[in-house]
Length: 80
Image (cartoon, rainbow, N blue to C red; front, side, top):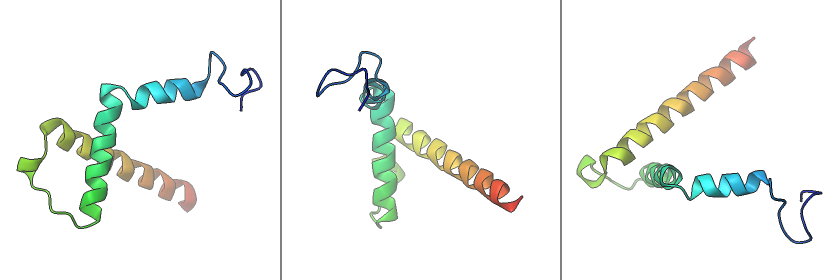
């Protein structure tokens, strides 16, 4: 809880409000769909390219690239 927040609420500059707004934006919802599709694939659900929208596919590609980059950075940090 933020010390500036009214009791039971959030302060007017709360970062949680920014996060909530980002997650419910068009881009945030697209990222959520891409993450859910990725989870479904990891669970063995078969999804063909015809079943994906182009923006969902490219978002999944970006997420995978970012995950790979994070893993490389972690390996470099721990390897030094």
